Image (cartoon, rainbow, N blue to C red; front, side, top):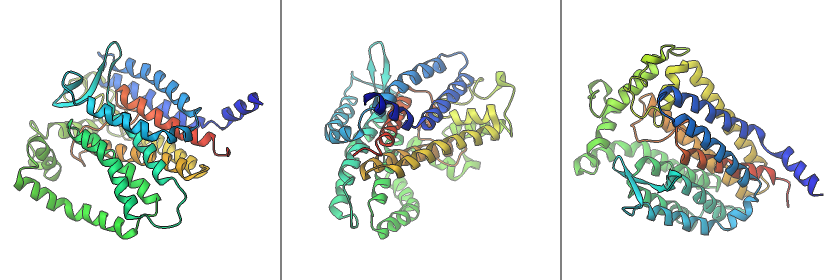
Amino acid sequence: MVAIIQKRKMRDFDWLVAAMAIGIVSFGAWEIHNAQPTETFWQKQLIGLGIAFVAMLAIAFTDYRRLVEIAPILYALGLVLLVVVLVPGIGMKINGQRCWIKLPGAGQFQPSEFVKIPVVLMLAKYFGKHRSGLLTWKEFFTGCAILGLPMALILLEPDLGQAITYLPLLAVVFFLSSVRMWIVAAALVGCFAGAPLAYTVGVKTGLLHGYKLERINVILDPENADKRGFGYHTWQSMVTVGEGGLTGSRDSEYSQSSLKFLPEPHTDFIFAVTAETTGFVGCLLLLASYAVLLTRLITDARRSRDRTGMLVIMAIVGGLIFQIFLNVGMAVGLLPVIGIPLPLMSAGLSSVLATFIAIGFAISVQLRRFVN
């Protein structure tokens, strides 16, 4: 009987999702090598892939419903980590941000990447019950509180980019929980109409100043931006993307990244490096790979046996789509630079491991779609 169950699990395991994730990380390691050929970042990325794959299997073969049941405990532990990282001497401060915790002999990890997972589980637990009506105001404010606590702690680091990536997790759950459409419409109108007002008020009150203001101005007025100052990152990324042409540049020795013109080529601007080395065709293939991965995850969500599993997967999908959109938008000069990694492509064990754990949850839901 056990053998039959194990055979069924292996048959139902979503190998396509796993294969696409592994393929994207492997391609990313190659691009990381192109970006930093004299460093060992690409080797660490492949080692991280091995660790992440094992973690994904462990989560996939664990019943997600058990983990959802202990979501409050995992959520509380996540908040503790976000508090601990703010403590001087424990949290590492890099580029003005205290976002990492040093692990002796194991490098460093970024708690804010992992806390997304218990946030998703907490939201799925609360909103996963059978619904027959519209989202109530009590549910609305409870959802905002669940998301608001970790976001507030992340903003104290301060890491605006990472905090923003939490927003789609709640937005997707609200949308799938029958939120009133006038609230959706009001939110969309508020975002588009309120952005110019927020910009003006931020400038006049001094809340928006320094590099944050300048990087927004680069996008609003690229022709007059200081290409050697705050506009340097955006300008160099756009130049790097343009160097690739249709099929990529073959002169890697004199590329923007190799000559150190492009900042953070192996993390924030890995998409620009991809555009330079593989061109427009390579970028399309990469985005197509993401599309296959995300489409398959959505299919798994539709097959879920309960709302909780569906919400877990769709929140993960929403977070990935949003992060891909932001990173690519930064690379091509359509959005301000706010330091967001490209999922599965950018160097960094925390990002890869957290993404694979999230994928493990999606596969766990898929494996149990016929279980009572």
